[in-house]
Length: 316
Image (cartoon, rainbow, N blue to C red; front, side):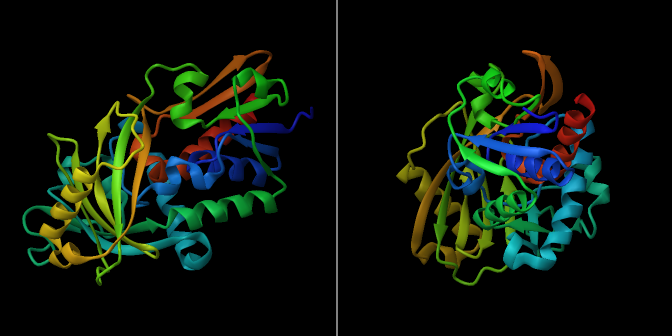
């Protein structure tokens, strides 16, 4: 074991981004994950930057805006990074209903009646093709001397036995691994269809139900969503929910109704009352927690990674 060794537990967007930051700061980083990145919840995420159902407000703004700045830079090489800047509308949303981050988003404004029926906001935001982005993060990690090991982690103490610093980015796995009973699944279902020509994104969240309506044009097809079912562990697509998703999206863009379905996806967002980004001493080593991001992991990944790296560096 070397003093600069770090083990990052988890290979989703939070884990890989944290590992990249640490490796590029000169640490010898190993990522431990039971599943490769392509098998994580991050890989099936829609990929739109937007602070969604994530706390605490006073910290989220900074994390999200630092991530936004990084994504805007990476969009210049979208073919490699998977990040594109795309115009779209967040319906049924007003500026005064958002957190302090909204005032810092370039170009965010009230949508015109032509852009959105009813109140809404127009913005040009990062829309991230997650399989491409996760592969790029992995390549960036390897280029900086890091490694990725597929191995089950039965206890955080196992990692602490092999490195003086461990960063726990285990997402939903933190429920058993920490253990942290506050972590719970929020089930999301998506339908991917052949894109009939939709070039802008659209989002609308129903504040009183588990439903959301969004259309996200990605290279592999048009992503239609979605659902947010608390404490639902099922990974099986529900045909009735899928039909309802298509129906809701077709009310926004009628051409979607006849689009050929390519794929159904289900992911379990790792939700918590607030993100846990903190340091503790355990088993003679230092443990930095970075989990509980719910459906906004992509939105805050870079900002949270920088803070986790700061805690890990200060700890050692």
